[in-house]
Amino acid sequence: MLAFSILLSTLTSLTIMVTAFQSLPSDSHRCEPVQVATNSENFQDGRIGPRMPCPQRREFFSRVSFSIAGMCTSLFLPISSSDCKCYLRKVPPSAGAIIELSPPPATLLDPYDPARNSIMDSVFSWSMATTMEDYEEEARPYKTELFQSLFDSLAADAGSRVPVIVEVGMGTFPNAPYFSQSMISSKLAGLDIIGVDPNDSMKQYALKNAEKSGLLASNVSLRIVHGVAEALPFPDASVDAVVVTLTLCSVSNPERAVSEIRRILKPNTGKFIFWEHVLSESDKGLSWKQELLSPLQTFADGCHLNRRTGLVINNAGFQFVDQKYTTMENADFIGPTVFGIATK
Image (cartoon, rainbow, N blue to C red; front, side, top):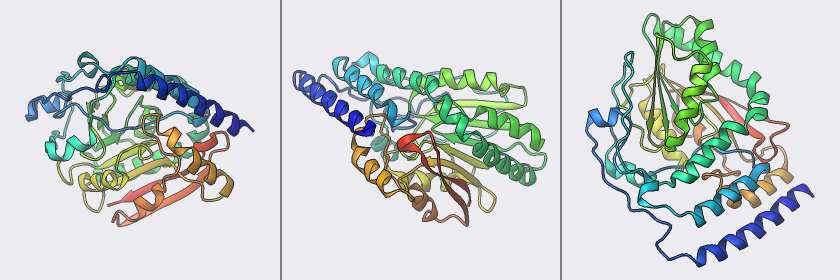
């Protein structure tokens, strides 16, 4: 009954939005991307080529009304040239940074990084920062074990060397506490962390969570750059670990994204830690609802309810994949979850 009510209200809202959309000038909701510099210095400061994006994290579908409101906002407040913020945003490089970023060719980047609406980005980043507490609390036992396993492995492989970790779709950085706790318990000498996200509005929340978790210490380098999963700004075989949580459900091309993750990992020791909601494997009724409602959920910054991300990872060519499946009891349509660690 609840699902039916949500669907009914959603369809009603969509009807209203279509009417509003048809009243707009045909090109009023678009923005021409602006070509920007792609040299190594500017790229390392936080921008990559033309300003274009890929979707990323999302809130519960039970809060879909919030997404619908955001959709209405994007229609009545269309993108303008000022909304696009098509410019190089200077981000001072961290003193302890180890890896040098490498801009992907425009031919690889452009298809996955279209112009974004800054108003929508701000609203969505705020929602992710303020509505996910219950979800993260339920995920905590799983994530604690997952991150500790990763960091123990990194400590064994790195020795006295500082590992490089990339979080793709960092968002508001809800994983910051796990980085901090696991780093201490595994006795790592330091960390070089690079967060990649297409939504630049997430950065302020990510830095706040990093500071709150004690990650902005002298032995930790943290950089947050604009980028997309399908065209990562790193050389081949240059990264010790990649972290992806609640991201592959919303990227434009999951296979391409996982292939990029595998490309940048160091051979034999490189680790890929993942936590992703997927199509239910154990509840046919739920999976039917996920299939039905997924087209509506994509308005939540591109999130899909019906992806089989576990199969994508298994088929990506990793040497070893330790993958598990669970259902989050209080997460509604994003409850079914695959998680684990893959080794290149």
